[in-house]
Every structure is written in C-alpha cells, then in structure tokens.
Length: 428
Ligand SMILES: CC(C)(CO)[C@@H](O)C(=O)[O-]
Image (cartoon, rainbow, N blue to C red):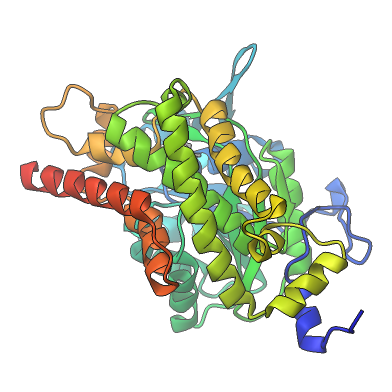
C-alpha cells in the first residue's frame, strides 16, 4: 500500500475513533486523589443542559459550592438560591432518583466576580478552571462574551461548549481570541436529554454520552486538565469520552436534532410520539438521508482528503462516516445512513418523555396557548427564536453549496420559520 504523506497522516489521526479516558497509554490518567487542578467550575446557561451539568457536578462532594451557574432567569436563580442548589431528578426504568447539587447561582457577571472573591477568601483560589457554555443558539453571542470575561486572567483553563447545531464553535473561538483569553476550547456533544420541570428542578431523561474534542488551543494545551474534567464528569454520572472524530459526531447529532426537534415542533408532541407511527419514522429516515449526504460532502471538504486517501483509511481498518461517504450507494453507505436514522429513533425512544428544546421554544412564546411548556420556561424563553437555522438550516445551506437537494429539510425549515414569525407577531 502506498505510504501516506505526513499531512495525510495528520488527517488520519484527526479521524481516529473515540477512546475513553484512561484507555490511552501515552496520556497520564490521574487518580481520584490527584484531581487537584480543578478549582471552580462556571456553567453559562441555566436551561436544561446547563442545569443538569451544574447540578450533577456539584452533587459530587468535592465540588460542593465550587460550581457556579450563570443564568438569565431570575425565577430559576431565586429557586436555586432558596435551597442553595439544583434538584436533579434522575429518571430511570425503575423509578426516579432525586439528588441535590450545591450550586452557587449568579444572574450577572458582577455576581460572578463576587463568587470569585468569595472563593479566593475561602479556598485561596478565585478563578474557574473550567467554563461550560450550555445555551441555545439564540444566546450564543452573549454567552461567548460572558465566557471570555469569566475566563479572563485564568491560565491553563478549559472552555467546553455543549450545544446543538453547527457553527457555534467558530463564534466562541473568535470571542476568546478577541479578548485574548488563554484557554483550550473544547467542543462537547451530548446525546442524552434533559428538561426543566420547574425553576430549580431539572429532569435527566434519556441518558447519553458526552463526546468531547479539542477544537482549538487559544494558548496552552491543557490535556491533563481535560483528562481530569472527563473523570469528574464520569464521576458526576455524565458518561464522557474524549474523541477525535468530532466532525462525524457533530453531523450525526445534527441528523438527530434535525429529525426530532423539527418534527416534534410541527406536530406539537413529545419525542416518543415520533415512534408511534410509521409516517413519522419514514420522515426521520428522509431527514437523516439528506443529512447524511450533506455530511459526506462537508466531511470530504473539511478533511481535505481525496478519494485515494479515504480508501487508504479503509485499508487501515478505519470505518465510519468518512468511509461510508466513499461508497454512498454501497452497503457501507447505506449502513451509515441507517445509523443516522436509527440514532434519531434511539434518542427519541430514550428521551420519549421530553419536550424537545425546539418545541419548548415555540410553545413558550405562543401567547394565550393552552399548551405552554410551563410558566417558568415561558418567562425564560419568551421572544426567542428556535435553533432551526443551525440545524435543518445548516443541512439546507451546506446542501446548496454542494449541489445536494434537501427538499424535506427545506420544507421543515420553512414551516418552523413560519411558526417563529407567527409567534413574534403575536408577542405583546
Ligand atoms: C436529544 C434531544 C433531541 C432530546 O430532546 C435534545 O437535543 C433537544 O431537545 O434538543
């Protein structure tokens, strides 16, 4: 077999599949006692994923009171302050387990500064080692700015973004560079689901895996801190793994969200409804098929690999989306296309009781509707647009660039845009 060039190898390395923390021989894996570098953790975004992350991490005893949640909702903040924490309801097959994470809450950057000062005087350190960004696309720019400010002055830190859709990492990267922040930016993709039950209470419904991957090092590459973060998240009950094939995972998740979020929003039903009839299952397959075809074109463009190189990856034994791209009309291609659709159906099954995040957005700003998600979210999300542009919109746009027709995603995009417009016009 022809040898790969150095640059081709770099691309192969970037495509290696996931490994769990601890599987690597070259990277040092810290023991529990060695986890000393994680000082404080700040979570930006008090929605379901931000509340889940902060609540579960704070429930791990050593992080008690050292997890800060920055939320724009005063109702959520008051509820968290009242009980000095977030209640996490862990929904399982045999019932619901309730736990409390002692989270400190802030409603503004100046309140985060107070928390920094308090931490400095109590523990001798005042900066966050990790900042999570867990907001919807509509809150992205503000959150990126907040992350840059919260991280300013800290060195060797991590900024981990856990969001739906595509395009947000570039925005966060830009904001961090603009403010000259020394941090390592990590992209996180969570395949599970969560929803807010009421202010201060989050339900973890549909457990998944958090895949994390370095997006770009602004300054110091903090691989040991990343390994520690992964261990902490695993200890917190959020199964987390470091992976290199984030682009593939991103597009698989886009296919999942493109199917579940748009369809549940138009149908006004919870995720599980999609599995109850063959028509919606067929739609999921159509959406995933278009998403898969677009993903293939994007992956080939991003990886910059020509077909010969891709074939060599296969000979090296690497299988996955890139490989499937080569033989879209072969069994390998069809299998990956099925994987995208099956993934969406599995997530819909695992999160069957969830109101998808997009449906929550649309319901919440429907004045006078009797199908409001709940009053808390109504207040929290009022006037927000949905994430449709970063999900189905991304499939349509990339499809246009690569000459791939995406009629199903385009129809969904247009329908959701109509719903957004109607709600905005009806808003007081
Ligand atoms: C996994 C998911 C579809 C569950 O509702 C979630 O990503 C959402 O709602 O956006």
